[in-house]
Image 1 (cartoon, rainbow, N blue to C red):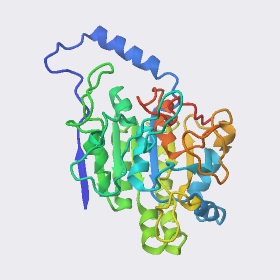
Image 2: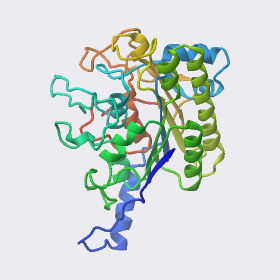
Image 3: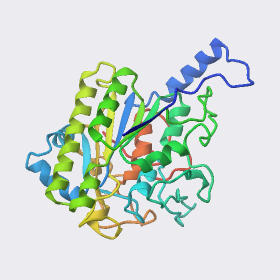
Image 4: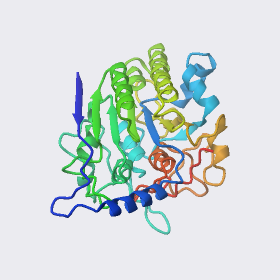
Length: 363
């Protein structure tokens, strides 16, 4: 069953205020364009392949079973040795890090503490949202993109992702204080569909009709197969092959549609890997080692992300590193939100700490 929650982009007129003059709107538009001038993409597709353990991925690529992942390696900048959150290797905590740029838990860092998002629940949230979880409003990549006048969306294949729609809707989203008021609803379109084929169909149709500048897409297939048949099983491999097919359709879209061609960047990571039938033990490398791939506008071809970022990131080899470990940090799934914004020419997520300097480079 498909659940769609559609919401038009927020009005630029504020109730109780006089409309802005044409001259004022032009000035604001010029300022916004200038602020985004450093960006290298007009559209960013931020993809999470739930449960995609890096240790299983490369063998399938080498055997010729994943032509689109192989293409992403040849044409993009990537690593198979990125990291999940330090404390948690489960779904919602890690996806929350992806879109907020925060670790899950607070860290006693110097000179200032690192504030986590604190979301550790991994089931359907009921009516709860991220902001009532013992701290103030938790800003996200959706906030920054939306408040700068860009269209945003989330396509999710698990029902518990309603957490993000509830956290950033018209009731719970923060007021827009950046330029014209685009409203409090930060996600213009939220689609939930457990059938990844149909969800991909809907995603492609929406992008062809009126593309989103920042869109988050989640595929459940590998995780579902891992829990049912074990990570590394034939069913798990078949699920990754299916995801490769979805990625192929997305690549075809962004390389043939004139609105998107040459203007779109793709970021792909995972929330965790897995072993046996689960992924809960955060000290197991099979659980915390994940891929991180980038492709498209503003991305170099055939490059290792650690080589491109030797001044700001360090390949952790097999180590599991905390956010306050001495030396450089590894690339993490939580880098994705601020990377997406930097590719769009926008500043970082307020109060974030993962890639807050936007120093993860893709070329």
